[in-house]
Image (cartoon, rainbow, N blue to C red; front, side, top):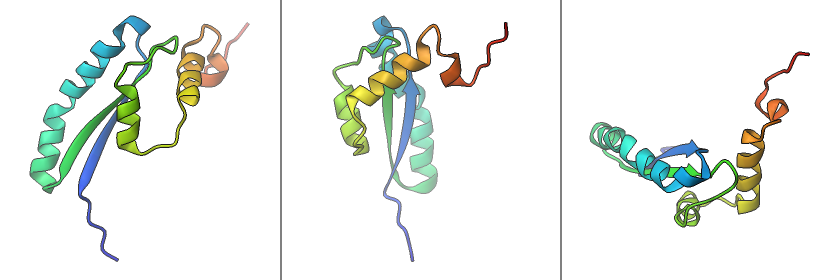
Length: 102
């Protein structure tokens, strides 16, 4: 079986403060632009950078739906919100694997 790769997606995930979500999306796109160019040059494939950015309290940018569509995922917005909030909540030690000692 021969598999031909036609596009490589660089998926970058961030959970910044709610006020910085659009800035962080742009930052991720710019940060991986050079890498995408190198991948295209070396492997002769198309590349696409897909930033998945959700604010620490669940805020999303207007472009998140578009980026999820690019990934063709069935992940719900509710799941994404919960993941972002639970990972950044003050008492999220049991989600991140950190053990509190008393």
